[in-house]
Length: 170
Picture (spheres, rainbow, N blue to C red):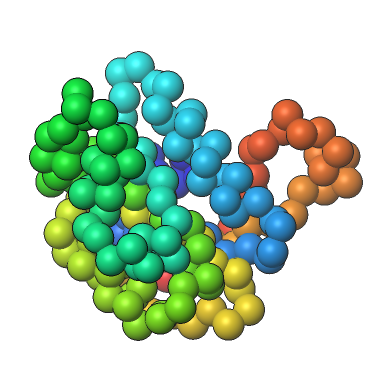
């Protein structure tokens, strides 16, 4: 996934920085996003500011993504975090990792939110996960990736979290 995020739209016109990662239940979609967020948060200097959120929770709570993050941090020394993240989003340095499109109660609300985030921060990469069953393409800008299962040897090794994805679409 990291390699895909590094692709520049100026060099590869098909790159939109909008990704849907599809995978069967238990295939590691959430683990992939969490691992990516943790790995990127440790980079120095940082390329992106990763933000991992559950899409169903975000929609249920009905609050703006950055306000939710600031509230979750909850300490006085993190006030103003929303403004900092907004600036990072405008500069294309925010990386939105939204998990669970297939688990939302209102699919139209989810699609609207994803479009709004894309419009608000056009240079910011956005990755959303879903199960393939019941998935329907909702926006041509989102490139679809299929999470590939580990082969037998790699399945037994919990330390090996690297996943292979294949790209679908044009």
